[in-house]
Length: 98
Image (tube, rainbow, N blue to C red; front, side, top):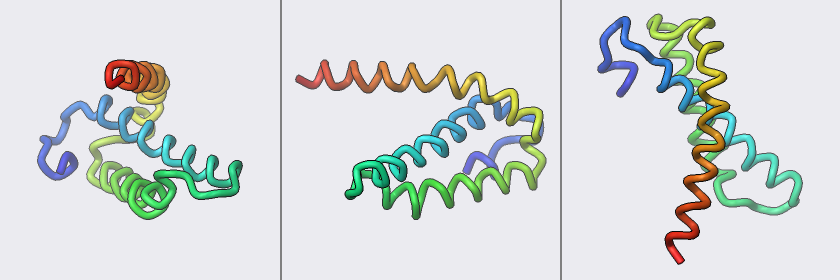
């Protein structure tokens, strides 16, 4: 939806950074399955939904000219900054639910 509905020239920095985190995080599920040698929640979704979706989205964003290598490189620091924010949110959610 984002690729099709936003105007050309729109800023995709935040969307690209979020997509980076979403894509890279899917590999943690695969890694955990390998390390623990058992099923881990999310591995099926990572393999059959998240990774193909991410590849397709990156492909379409590049193909339509919404992002380029420079924007992808610029999104990396923002992606790294998002990880601790998401982890803190996860911890706060666990504490507030109890």
